[in-house]
Picture 1 (tube, rainbow, N blue to C red):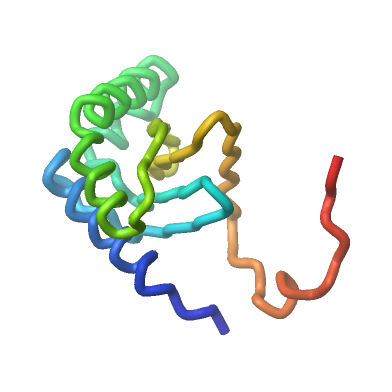
Picture 2: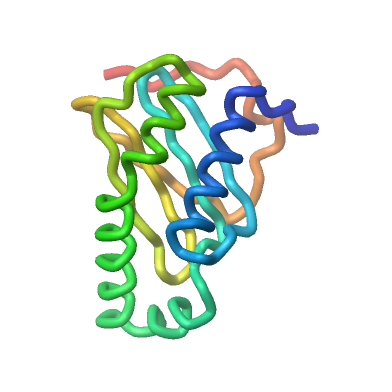
Length: 139
């Protein structure tokens, strides 16, 4: 059984969904929001149009789709930043966008002087497996 989504995560997901629809004209299939310390990661699943998916079938087309989405995000991100700040009560210090053209997943990673790595898993990790006490890897 999955944990219920927090009200704040739900509001951010809704804001991201509206932002993507207004920005691209395409509604993502699903939105995932994860907060870890000062990093907020919003993943928009199925965010590419059919034309973008077709274009992304080869490396040159995929690079064009990635660059297009980077430019769109950089020119319009201030709207989503303000919405996130209003919802969380915390200023967004940095924002970037990356897209995985083969799956159509768009990732927004908000960080401040931190490297955020996002891994899209092929399937869910069961809650009971995830929550087992295991030592964390600290360097």
